[in-house]
Structure formats: structure tokens, C-alpha cells
Length: 68
Image: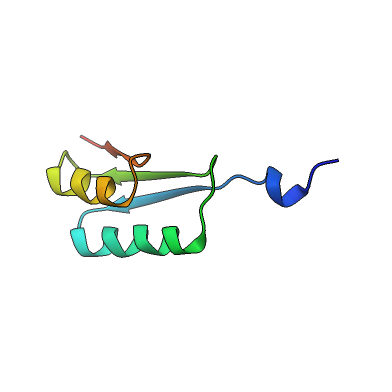
């Protein structure tokens, strides 16, 4: 029998338009103890190298999505 806590996976969706709040949000998620199988989706209003760079600083698994 598996532990129910191990079966739970989380998805966090972060809408962003600014650098300071995105960095703080990703840091909070990291401190919360995300595990393998959990995912972070960052949604930005248009492509931004700043958003890509901030995501890359926090994890190579975070890939931003862009709304056009």
C-alpha cells in the first residue's frame, strides 16, 4: 500500500507581467519543497527574455508559456 502523501502531485500556475513578483513567487515555491512530479507553469503576456532568464535561474524544469 502506498502513502497517500507520495501520490499527491501539485501544479502551480503563475500569471506574470513583472520580474520582481515572478522571482519571489518561484523562490516561495522552491522553499515549499516541490518534489519530482510537481510542476510550475509560468504564463506571460508576450515573449520576454527576462521571464525566461528568471525561470532558468530557479529550475531547468520551469518552462514559460506565452499568451499572444
